[in-house]
Picture 1 (cartoon, rainbow, N blue to C red):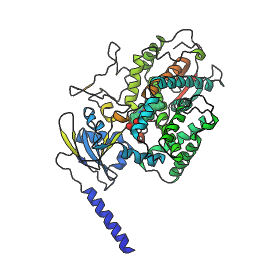
Picture 2 (spheres, protein in one colour; picture 1 turned 180 degrees about the vertical axis):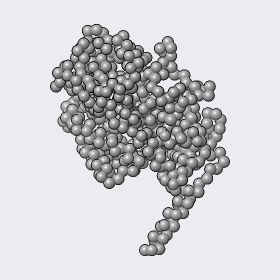
Picture 3 (tube, rainbow, N blue to C red; picture 1 turned 90 degrees about the horizontal axis):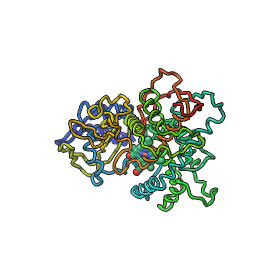
Picture 4 (cartoon, rainbow, N blue to C red; picture 1 turned 180 degrees about the horizontal axis):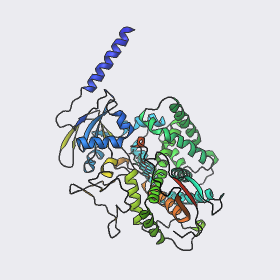
Length: 489
Ligand code: HEM
């Protein structure tokens, strides 16, 4: 027994030494192992990835390798070199790490599914006629929910709420009705989903313990039950997005257990970003009066004088161009969308940067792009990057500004809220349409103000870097009521 323990400890020590003794070889990116054996920079990375990676960028430049919990991760922060990673499907692998995260987070394993097939299925449903049906349905649900949520209150009565809860709840419910078409358990799903979403980052990183772990597992099971399909209760009318996805999984021979886990993943993918994005958008508008004024002025140009909420043409926004709106939304997402794009190095690779410099990457390491730090918050690309400028993406003649430069060279990706390459968001058009419709209806038909006119936006919850649109730590208290004259904006 003693010998076994001794041998195990020796093995462990050798492993630690092996990992700790890695040194930078010729042509490899700068190596920063951190001072904690094996863990390296894991704690700092998990606590606030943006702060940590900005510090590393200051120290090492646009490319460097850091040790994170026994893994070596090469971080690339030069947007003009991103294609060398995004387009490489031979030396870099997209699925391995993703599959591990899906297993940890959703208990999901679907070896029979080919990612390209699933992607094709998704794309079909978020483009052309299917997309326009989904957008119309979403817009109707947003409008109806907004109305029905008000109906118990007198028209002149103010209601108070946290802006984050308000936006997340309404857009989640509208999205759920659109894609899952089930009204019976909508509120229960939302409540359970928020519980699960609150623990998701710890689940994904594998750092969840004790009571929280129990809560997360229970919540995941409960959501799986709530999402189990109600196929038999439906008649022969056209099938919902969810039912169609189910059929796809059945065709791909995914077993029943995994089917409902996959549905939970889809619920999260399709619902976790739009509500938080709408929160930041409205939050920036409420705390930047010049932006709110410019947007309302653009709306006045769109709104016919004789509409009422019940008869409002929901495709009003689609029929007009809205340059101020589009720029302000893009600016919101530049500040708050923080995806991490990861790949596993499956064969030693030479990475050629846009400036011609070449770096060797080792098999077994990971590569990570974090567009939030650069290009999105890079002061050499976006002047004064911490400031919200609603017209940052507008030229003087109100055309779209899409030329941004670093060191005199045009930057190919100047902001990347939707990701890029083969994993880019397939729901982009749908999400933009939903957020715009939601904000438009809210500002057109509600009086909306902050409870404290001097209030500031709550800080960012730093643990969510890498998980799509960021969430706040706390909320912004607002009050709202139906406008008496609906066009007095
Ligand atoms: C502001 C809102 C949204 C943002 C910023 C956003 C952003 C993203 C990003 C960055 C990815 C890539 C994730 C990765 O590489 O790991 C992604 C994937 C995806 N998004 Fe969105 N998203 C939003 C809303 C939506 C909505 C409303 C839907 C659908 C209803 C949607 C559907 C999807 C799907 C299906 C994928 C997976 C694509 C794949 O794996 O190939 N997204 N999204």
